[in-house]
Amino acid sequence: MRPEEFSYELPPELIAQYPLEQRDSSRLMVLKRVEGTVEHGSFLDIKGYLKRGDVLVLNDTKVIPARLMGRKPTGGRAEVFLVKKKEGVNGEELWDCLVRPSKGLKNGTEIAINGGPSDIKALKLSARLVERSQEGIWTCSLMTDGDVTEAIEAVGRMPLPPYIKREAGELDKKRYQTVFAKNPGAVAAPTAGLHFTPELIEELKGGGVEVHYITLHTGPATFMPVRTNDISGHTVPRERFSVAPPVIEAVTRAIQEGKRVIAVGSTVTRTLETTFAEGFNGGGGGGSGSGKNETGLFICPGFEFKVVGGLLTNFHLPRSSLIMLVSAFAGRERILGAYREAVRKRYRFYSYGDAMLII
Image (cartoon, rainbow, N blue to C red; front, side, top):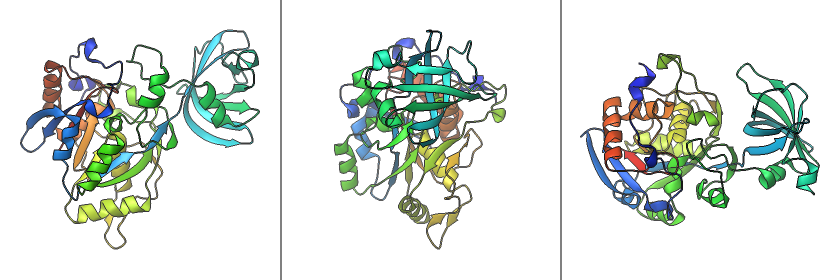
């Protein structure tokens, strides 16, 4: 299949630039796969679609302020965009980074973050370029007199996606983050989880829905279009994840008892399908793939889902790996038809937009 087979027309004004005042006040489109029907409501209506015994799985990754602004030794401006932490000891950490502008960069170049000590006063943070990969990713050594994580939190900016045409502000520090985020490492929010409030989660639990959490640190590739002529040639950068034994046991039990596993977002979907790629351990209740801690799983039409029986997601970019994932789950024509209806009904799209529940 070709990437253009996953395109649709979207008026720019439907791309949400800000979150709604209340997280759970977004709209909800419900797509029923068997019937092929579409229903419309508000996000709080999800309580009527989730059933007692359902296992709802969310991603508790926490977005870090990954955009570090600084200056090269020449005085020119530079941005170091953190992608993935590699290791760190004694005030120094190695990270995979994107650095722009790239002109004049070489091994050993040191970028003074936030303009250097004269601007930071009490905080000195720098990024020394160690090595550049063929894909254009730099290994950077982040150095500070104190704690690198605290320094990043102090001077970094939230990494809003490129289709949000404004600078990140104080609002985004809270709202481009789920209410259950706790494990730092993502550079993009697991946006399907942004709609939940603590009160809604407790209501779902009270109604008999089992709620569990995995961690997958979302990378920047989530926003990138598929550029290969045939989608079968596309690859997804590997991302780190963690699934605790109680989650593996709960998912295994649900599958064996014929209950639904509802994934909140593409990150949870990819994590669960990777974890149980080799099936289920009926004796101990564990997935045979549970020892893995990275996934490069690209889900597109033709993929056989072993775990996920329902998917809560936002509306995705044309030609992206994410729209291909939901097309694999619900059918390409059905998804594109639902997207066209969402446009007609003026849904809000992308990270700060409305939600879709596919069951």
